[in-house]
Length: 356
Image: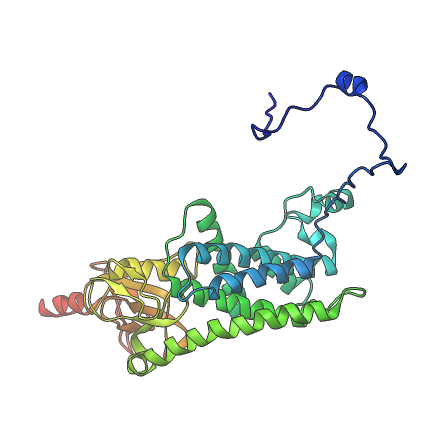
């Protein structure tokens, strides 16, 4: 079924027989025939990969700086376009190494499918892994983590809807933007024949607005520095904004990030979220030997005072444990003594000693 979308005041087109029967157009008195209107030339979409990625980045910084703070629609498109930029730029570098590397399964790659764009491409995480392991690109963990978090945010937004505080989205976006700007400079030199001044112009535009976002982050950090500096030993990293601003030790009740204000209904859920941000499985949250709340994230927790040291930390009372073991008698977790360990928690050990 076809539909005609002409306005009601536009007459229907003449049939071919009517056109044939119609009198020929009269020639003006001056002897010249009026020329037919020229058809517009077709417009082609032509965005080389780097220019395409820069165009997405321009859109990102526009959305993040159009109003202060950005509204939900701006944040939505900032996340979507930033992820699109990351995919385009990372895969552009993979293609420089070898075109088959952008396929989800390089073993099924054919030149015909590649040139037609008829294939499933690799994920952002796979692109980062291949750039590191195959192309030898030095991608630091901080940049890789920012890209993976961005991909998760985009998938959540695209398929389920994303609920996150605006500062958290801005902070994550700033990290990914910062990485991509360095990546372009180091790994994606301008190709011969492409106007260098145009690339530099786009990069300058994005950098200028990125500095505005970074200024916001700095102001927020400055506001919080004095209060967070005193509690670095019990401050965890927020899984949403990646800032060290979740202060532990307030009991089993609600926890919140002091930077982006994201909140958890209880310490146990905050511990679980923190673990899942670092490992997809094997996350263990157990009862605390100190406060007895089920809020100890085992072996995966880090705090601001020692961000590289993974150990066990209770999100309810803030106490950290380098080692946790399971009591052979009551099966509860305990922290063994410094010099000896009999396989029993202190309560069970005291109970056995009391028998004698």
